Every structure is written in C-alpha cells, then in structure tokens.
Amino acid sequence: MPKNPKAAKGTKLAKAKKKCCKDRPRCAQCPVVLMRLAKMGYAEQDPDKPRRYTVDTSVPKKAWLIARQLTLASAPCRIPTPHPRSRCACVA
Image (cartoon, rainbow, N blue to C red):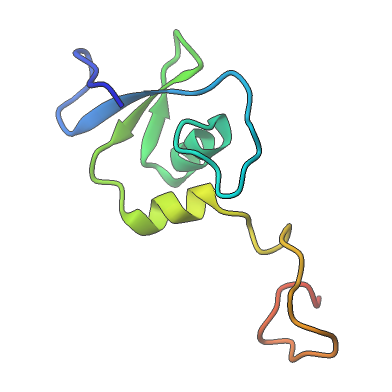
C-alpha cells in the first residue's frame, strides 16, 4: 500500500478494488476486508473518495486474519452430526 502524504504518521493509504473477487481468504485490497477493518477501528474511509481507506500500520496479524476470513455463522460446519454444542456455532 502506498504512503499517503496527507495521512497521519503510522498510517498507509489503501485503495479498494472495484469488485470483490470472493476468493478464500479474501485479498487485502478487497472492499469487504477494508470495511471490516474500518468496523474494528483499524481503518478510516476517506469522505471524499469512498474507495480509499487510511489503514494503521500497526494492525495486528490476528485482525487481518479475522477480516480476511469467513465468519463462523456463514461457514459450513465440518463436524459430523451429532456433535457437542460447545464446539460449533451451527447449533443454536
């Protein structure tokens, strides 16, 4: 990601792609990943150009992994039924 001359120190400019390719795991320039990072507080969307985000350089690796992966609710369960309730989010 290129550095933004207007951004604060410790941040980088990220430009989201026009369309998400829906690969697994999602790429770092995917608009969904940048939106998730913004919800977590590690990025801010530019009000003038909606596809541009200012991302902290100190984003933990765990936050990137969470933003790039599926959520448990939308992921298919790989544990055969019946299984304990404590292991999986698919059992309500």
